[in-house]
Image (tube, rainbow over all chains, first blue to last red):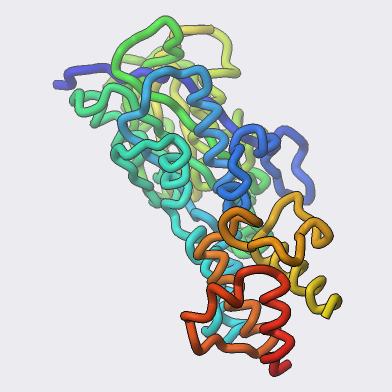
Length: 288
Length: 85
C-alpha cells in the first residue's frame, strides 16, 4: 500500500512550435543566456544540454522547495556530441581526441548539469531505455514519493534530433507515422497536494510487442479498469505528436500536453506508441 | 607573427566555443587562464590538441606549460620557435 499519492506541482517544456520542415521538427529554443547566466558553463554545453537544463530551470521557476532527487530520461542522449566524438576518432586515427565532446556525450550530462546549476547533491539518475526511458524515470520518482523517501523531486526527459540520426532512423521506418521531433519536458513531482497542484499521477504502465490496434485498445481498457478510471479522456499520440514529432521520449511532451492543453478536469490517459513499445500514463487533472 | 596570433585566436575561439568574443577582443598580453579569458584545465587540453594538430608540436616538458600557455604572446612565441608544420 502506498503511503502517499504523487502530484504534478509544476511543469515546463521546450518543444517545436513551427511546422515540420522536410519531415523534421526543431524545438523552439529560448534565449539560453537568460537561463544559464554563467558563460563559462554555457560554452561547454551542447544544444541538448542547454535545452534540458533550461526546461528544468523553467519548471523550477518561482518554486521554493528543493528537489530531493533529479531523475532524467533520454532515448538517445547527447547525440550531436557523440557523433562529433565518434567522427573525431575516425578522422584523427584514434589519437588527439578533444575532451569536451567526450565529456558531453555521456547520457547523464544533463542531470549532472542541472544538479551543478542548482547546487543539488541529492539522488541523481538518468534512465536510457529507448521508448521506455521517460516512464522508467517516472516510475523511479513515483516509488520514492509514494514511499515517502522524498517529498519533492524533478523528473524530465530530453532528446535531440541530428541529421545523422534522422537518416539512420528513417531507414528503420521510425518517421512513417509522424515527422521526426525533439524536445525537453520536466515535471516537479511532490507527495503533498497544494494550491498550485496540476494533477495526480495515478498509474504508469509499459508493454512491448507487435500488437494489433484491437489488442492495444484492450490493454488500455484493462489498465483503465484496473485503476477505476474507465471514463478517462484519452490523449493519444495522434494528438500530441503532430506538434512535437516522433522521438523516444515524446510521451513526456504528451504528459505536458495533457496537463496544459486539454480542457476540463478528471482522469486522462496519455497513450503513446514508439515502434512496438507502448506506454500508458494515467493522471487525474485538477484544473481545466 | 601577427598572422600567427590572429590564427591562434580564431582557433581558440572555435575549439573552446568562446561565445561573444572576437579575435580582436583577445588582448595579446592578457592571461589566458584565471583572470584573463578565464580558461581552465579542460581548455588547456584543447590547446594542447591545437598545438599538435595544427603545428605538429608535442609538449615534452609539462613543467614549462604554465609559462607557454600564459598569453597569446607567449603561446605564439613558442609556436614560432617550435612549429613543424
